[in-house]
Image (cartoon, rainbow over all chains, first blue to last red; front, side, top):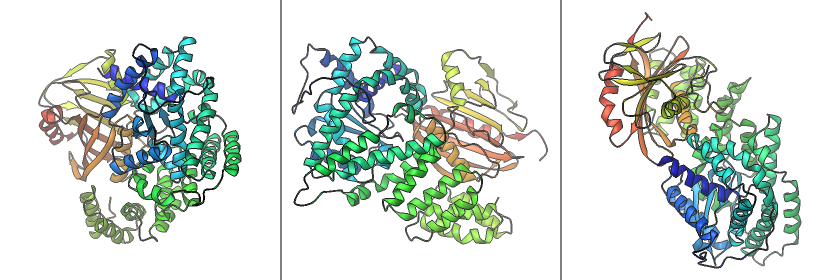
Length: 399
Length: 187
């Protein structure tokens, strides 16, 4: 049963990933243009493909990986409808907790947005350009064209097999296996250009600042460069250079006609909506232990004027997790800087207290532990922290 | 040193592994301690991990992770570089985060730790916390973890099971096992 479910999800992922925003492959195909309420004719290969995707969607709906926060999901749906009011009712978006940059579009209108994307888009306009790109894949039926192309080349089963073999170890493992699908993906580069074009037009028509489109790829390029310094990665091996994409998007942005009301970036609305998720998403990011890429994310967040206390906190967390050279000292400094801000997360008090306690400065730790429990009275580790405080109070050094 | 408890589960599922039965009575888990199970468990070993189950590892299991030294991943789940290596100076909160990270990397979702507190591990000081999480298919599971650091090595006992039926089924047995921990050497 589990295997059938994995195969279905793999099928959805496969059919979707052919049209993911990551880039890819070329085929040709004059763009079809799906209309509202589109359904394939029942006796076609497309209907069979939809049936398979519909079954996979059933599994996706109950997946533990879904982020079900109603406000964030409503926000994504709202952007999609701003971009494509004619077909937005046919696009069903799922926010999936996978800490990598990606969004995918299946032929039956299932769009997956991976949570790592939300850490890498800095405002609503950037997110809109990605979602617009995916909607264009749907509108132009790219995954159907890819499916038919794959059938012609007799490769259609290979990616399914590759994906399902990794099913037992989660998407992190699946992603590694997906690298092997690269040869098939290489032939949809024309689709990517067409989706870039279609998505760009939709976003500009909706008033989103076109200059933001290139910023996404610039940020990804910085991450890729940082990872290159620390060794090869899946991202590098599957993601083409984004320089050409940046140049093309900037050129188009300069040519776009500014609306009378000015361009919309939506930074505040984006930050307010994503804020409840950011802490968990940053934790997911740190869990990957890809510290050079995470450092770029933190640098970009600081440059974009995101919450200073949050940036300092996760900078400190990065140092603590990496634990190399003078990272312990750097972590202490960053936690202290974080605590200069009134909106510092309660965990910052605890973490700095732990550093003090470890280094024999129990008396300095005590008020920080107290501040932590005051701000987080239902803390999951309250009993442990109270035990530390009691030990420090008794003249011991915590643990 | 590789522990690979996920690999161990895969081995179990593949049928390529050798089960042994653990009868009720005193059982030496590692060089540090012994326990006294009250029912018969099926056991599989790999490296520093012993996994016990009655109905199947996907339904419920107790994992004994013993003697993890500095630099070794705490649970060594995916054999990728993502996992947090153990450091003897880690505090209990860091150990909880490392366990939560390891579960998340293995595909568990929405992993939440609850009620971290001091707890005796046999006759030495240790810690304990509970876990709630979903598996990849969205099935709710519960967990309980007890651990300690002795001579700069980490010892964990992790009980997990489906929230419906299996976790409660052996929760009492798990508590009895924890209560029965006896150190095999003088501390």
